[in-house]
Image (cartoon, rainbow, N blue to C red; front, side):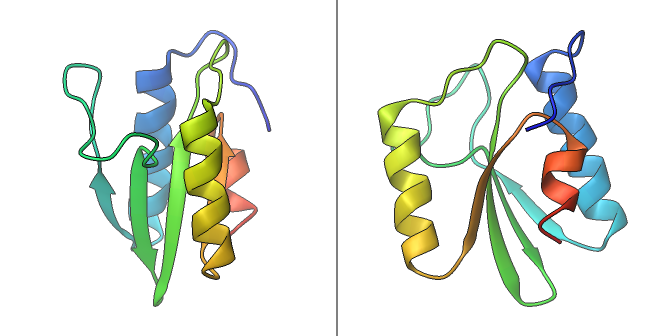
Length: 96
């Protein structure tokens, strides 16, 4: 993971969304800091690009991946999807 020190998690998320949309992806943001996700552990961004589904857990410089997030990522990978933790656009771009 490439850490973008100096960027908040919200800024990292914006950077990732901008990059995905520039590649033509449709993106869903599952929640923000003010709202809880429907299911605990669901990745922050779900993107569809060229028929592929990507699950992206966004973390800022001091972010920690919870056990629920690890479990969700493992389940999605087990179903053949790309599921990653990203600290910046570079982490996502490697999986496109």
